Image (cartoon, rainbow, N blue to C red; front, side, top):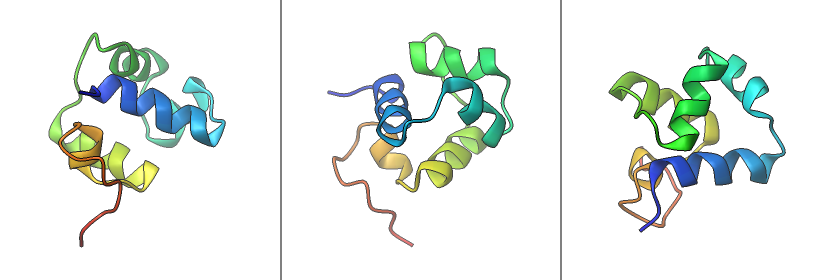
Length: 73
């Protein structure tokens, strides 16, 4: 099963973003974003929603609960 950290890294790299740029766009410190991608920490619910919205994917996709990236609204 794919982990949150792997999904964050995959999505960022697919788009050609740096960790620093991504962190700035979602209003996180570089260190916080790096911790999420390394799997050292997990984001709180609000941050998880922000990351899902930023990447245009569902929270379930980020958490590895589905392979479907589509957001159901």
